[in-house]
Image (cartoon, rainbow, N blue to C red):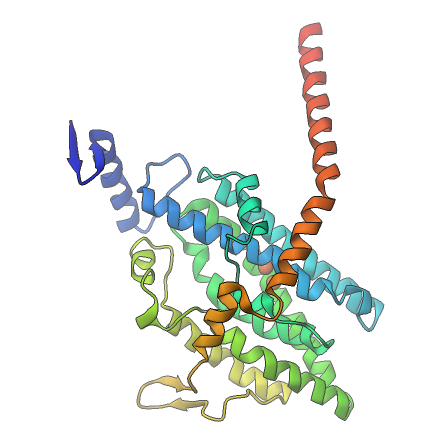
Length: 328
Ligand SMILES: [Fe+2]
Ligand SMILES: [Fe+2]
């Protein structure tokens, strides 16, 4: 049976598919790549997972910039491992997005032509070594708060990728905390450098959870689909609650004079976030947007010979398998 709703034609297969999909979501179970899914669910996931992948890949730059200048061999090795983890995260996530029917080439094209978005946090500069500490502690810390609930996302490949990513993110957060702790136990100049980095990264890290709930129109649908589990403001609250005791251990001050626990509301009171800044950076007008894209574009072009060589090798291997089959 075929019926028409507006401009979309709905077939009996779609109706059965939708019913099966609804049942999986209602049971809080998982949708897998070959399952029927609503077009809007697929589109939302492609957008979210590819933006997430782009963020991991662009996110390598602010820290990659410090690998050669890390203050010791040990710090260099740790930072290199961390940046390499982020590349791995990007790869798992591109693979997860590919299961939804978009190609890696399409996603890369969207990124390097500036059509795709990625987390606005990576458009800020990293002028000092303490930025490596603040990024690990605050940016990876915010990423963990955001991503732990995504381990239960209804789309199987996304949820499974997030499990491994979250394990690595928690190492990232600790290494950042430890960098800041060492600096805070150092000289006055080192303590000042750590505080300055915290001052610069604190607000952008709070922006990572996205606009306030009343200005986040797509959240309700994502929650109904079991992709998102908590609202932006709830996650932000959880993050701040995690930071406050850690800031005390570090001896750093979180740069918000209005930050305090409110017993009546059971929430943290805080100053208004500068959303104009968030939207400016998101629109491509942050301090480092153009630079981040230029470097990604150059890296992609410089890597053309590697892709060609890998493709030629794969063809050769495939031909060799064919040959052995013919002989046998
Ligand atoms: Fe990551
Ligand atoms: Fe990370």
